[in-house]
Image (cartoon, rainbow, N blue to C red; front, side, top):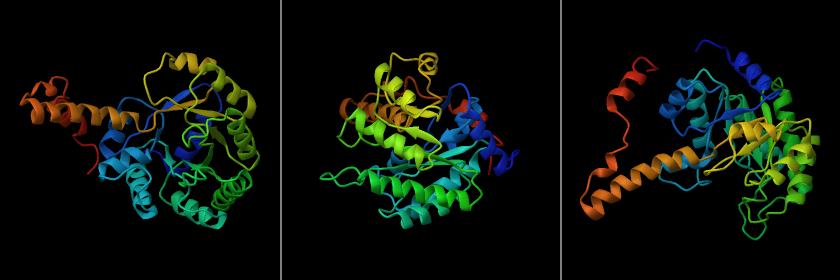
Amino acid sequence: MTRTLAERRADFRVLHRTGCFAIPNPWDVGSARWLEGLGFQALATTSSGYAWTLGRPDGALSREAVLAHLRDIAAATDLPVNADFESGFAADPQGVAESVRMAIATGVAGLSIEDSTGDPAHPLHDIDVAVARLRAARAAIDEAGGEVLLVGRAENFFAGRPDLDDAIARLKAYSEAGADCLYAPGIRTREQIAAVVAAVAPKPVNLLVGATSELTMKDIEALGVRRVSVGGAMARAAWGGFIRAARGIAEEGRFDGFAEAASGNELNAFFQGRGA
């Protein structure tokens, strides 16, 4: 590593002040190092992408497993890393604060806390509970020196409650509770994006682009978004290639699924000398 953790955390905050940057989501050490090699300025973990590497569905991993993954990714790259920290691995504010303290110790530069409950009958925390959880996360970060960036997430569109007005009300409340960056995964239209950006200004907004989109980075920047993540999309793209190749062999006895495979020589050359 050439930059200290304090420098990476400071750099991460600077990235959110002006312009718009892409923050792609690696799912393991190799993908993190490859993305760093492409010149990205920051990375974010993906809970789904990592879970699939262990043969588990998204949201099924323990706090201990996720913390170990955060340590691995943060140690593998010289870039600031934002943690997909799911719902903080606790329902109550005290538990969220404890989890956040543990996440900070892994070396991440930022972390997000969702307001989803995992209960289909009541998929979102009541807003007062969600705000208390964000305040607890903020306090834990401040007690640790305040360097880590806190992202407040309104999960309405992912939790089957696609109410933009409610999502905006939640994001505004999370901003007031101390979130540094706001995020409503699942919004897609220009109108939705512009409404969220305007509602929480001047705080930065993260936009998820998890599928093919007519919007380019230039378009998104023009809408006022500060950062763009892709969630599990890169992991799904890799799985897509694997599944197509595997099904070709299993179902048709064909090997043309390897047509677009990466070159082993290219991969070996890239990873030569990059870490132990």
